[in-house]
Image (cartoon, rainbow, N blue to C red):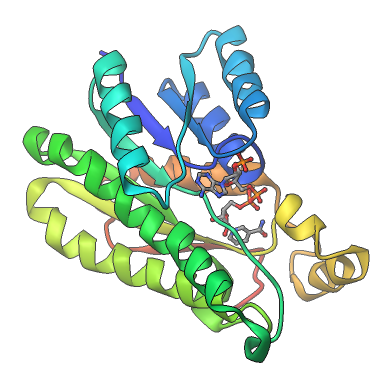
Length: 244
Ligand code: NAP
């Protein structure tokens, strides 16, 4: 039977690696994206070329109606989503005193409300089937705070609250909810900080390197697997020792 995984923000970076890792483990993967249609289609093609099942699906996770439509379309084509990975996220840098209402609202809308929207869209089927798995992508900055990224850190701290609360609420229904908190990972999000900041982050990481998207994908695949069948409400920090 087809096992369907929906990964938000999977056109590039960590989301792409998660989609590829899950596809290699036999999941039929839905690659959600917002703007980069070609990139998302390329990920899907790459997975299909390797013998996997993949489709690219567009939706702004912050837009509840768009998310509902995306999930209904996936369910019609492939059946219910058994694994949801809330990975789509944005970050913006700047002093808190300069943070605009629009930037604050958009950061929370994508990083926190986006996860809420997708969970509410897939939940009816999961509840009906009394099984399911949700993995939310938080961040070490949500665990320890981040200067000049206050909105981002708040949104990622809230994702931890969402994870733990839903783990409690959904455990009786056989649905596990966990989070991965990545450290500094080599993606566009970190590249845009510039070479100097990148070198500083490498220096501050005890394992002496930035993480790869695959490092995070493997942590997600573990939480989604039967090997983690007794884990719920957990935040797995994958950061090369950054916040030990
Ligand atoms: P990235 O390279 O910037 O990619 C972001 C992905 O999210 C893209 O696929 C993008 O789609 C998608 N996206 C953005 N806004 C969206 C929206 N409103 N609706 C649907 N998709 C949307 O980011 P990344 O570094 O891979 O980060 C992935 C996740 O890990 C994020 O939640 C991030 O906060 C978290 N994280 C990253 C790091 C790090 O060091 N990189 C550390 C800790 C946590 P398009 O390409 O179509 O725009």
